[in-house]
Length: 178
Image 1 (cartoon, one colour):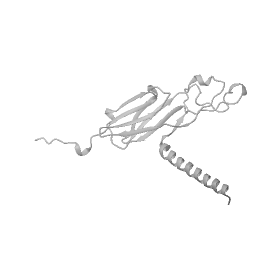
Image 2 (cartoon, helix red, strand yellow):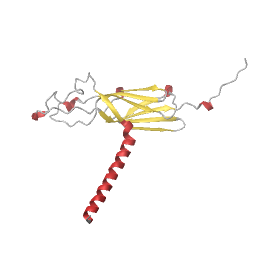
Image 3 (cartoon, one colour):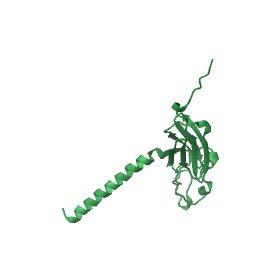
Image 4 (cartoon, helix red, strand yellow):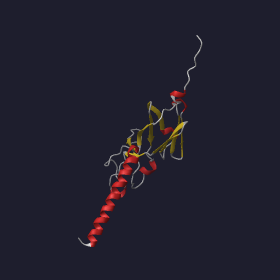
C-alpha cells in the first residue's frame, strides 16, 4: 500500500471514530429531549397543512410542513431543599403551558407552540421548527412537594421550582398522653 493510501485510510478511520463518538454522545445526552408535536385543528389549518395543500410562491411547489419532532432541552438540578427544572421553549407564551405531576415521580409539561401566521404569507419557506401540541415527561430523581411548586416563563425558558419533600427519617411523630 502506498504512503498516500495509508494516510487516507488512517484519516478515514479517525473521521469515522470521531463521528461515531459524537453520535453516541448526542444520542445519550439528547435522546430524552426528542419531543413529539401533534397538529392542532384550531390553528386555521396552518400546522396540519400537507405537502399538496397550497402552492409556494411563483414556482408552484407545495410548502414544506412543519416538523413533527423537535428537541426540547431540559436541565435538571437539585440541592438539599429544592429541585429545579429548566426547559428551553422559545416563541411561546406563559398561557401555552400546563405543568402537572402525572405520577409521584413524573413531572409532565404540556404545551402548544403556535404557528406564526406572518410566515404563512411569505413566498417561500424553510421550516425546521415544530408546531402544535406537545407533552414532555421528566422523571424526577427525588421526591418533591408539589403543593409548594412554582413555575415561571421568561426569555424562552420555562423554570419549575419544586421543593423537596422532607426525608421520612427526619419527620417526628409527637407522642401524646391519652
